[in-house]
View (cartoon, helix red, strand yellow):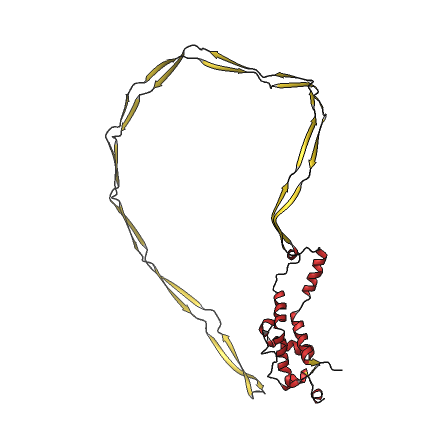
Length: 348
């Protein structure tokens, strides 16, 4: 009775033992997700349940893993197979089959063929002819003339230009001007018009009055005349002279050769007639069947070293049902339920 009264909820136990993870030293715990993952998930699922023996809670969890090693590891192995819904149920046949024949055939009766047909063939025509032509003459001409033309230019034209003309221009400026400007006079008068109350001073005004008349500009020329003198001296000469005489010479050498050859012989000509071989068949073949074939005996199919390799045959719907059961399998659920059953009690 004292143990029951000392029960605490899983939440309270975890708060009193903040640094303790009861899954840490469990057998093969790393292969099932690790101690931290299992402890966090265990609290999430069963926080409101009470720990049956709080002082022995850690050892009780470890005992679950210790005594269920084979169970947990075997279940883990079943999850390692590749998921393939239908291929996993296929069967591979190995070995060979022997087909032993024990049949005999008996043929009786006579088959008769009645020919009542006529065939007519018209072949295409080919005619060969041999013709002896008259003598044939072959002429060969070999040109050997060579014409050489030589042109020798000898006229030489020489042009000589001797520039001797020279011009010189001299400018003598003699006219100049003097400009004198007389500005217009003016007078300024200043008077006080009003009083500036803000600045405490009178306002002054200046009046600019120009003198009567206008500004005077006087230009005075200087006497004299500008002089420009151009002097040309010398004579420009151009002289052209020709010497020599052009010569053109044409020379032809060699001889054209013409050879005539006589040949004789036969020319074969083939005359072919167009057309196609034609076969015309008339009448009808008649065949009368008066025989039969009877099979006796039995064929025997035997197996030599024959065996089936693979998995059992399953209808597709049953295979789908099995695969659904496998898909809903969770090893973590089984482990946590076993730990919960061994360590916790429900709260009513």
